[in-house]
Length: 95
Image (tube, rainbow, N blue to C red; front, top):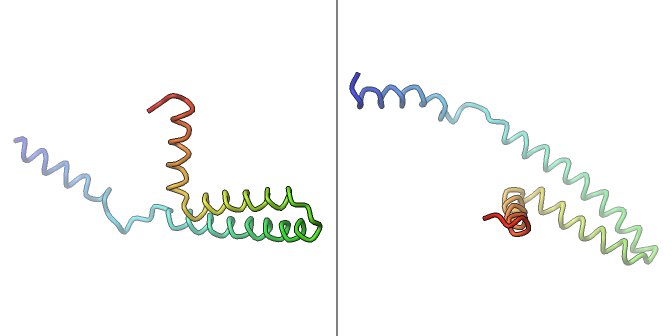
């Protein structure tokens, strides 16, 4: 078998792996993240409103910070993961 024939057969074998019709589960993962995140944010907002009316300012700011963190993890999860990886690289001394 010639080299170009071997390369052509490898491309034919790998072609089904690149098929865009094969489900990957990414849409389901995004759906679960959005639903769970919205429920969690709704709970944080309700608790923050309670802290506001009780004038518990430290708890209120803690819930706002948690809401921002959860919102970042849910709606921009790839960018958040890259930021956390970069931060961990700085802490651990890695590249």
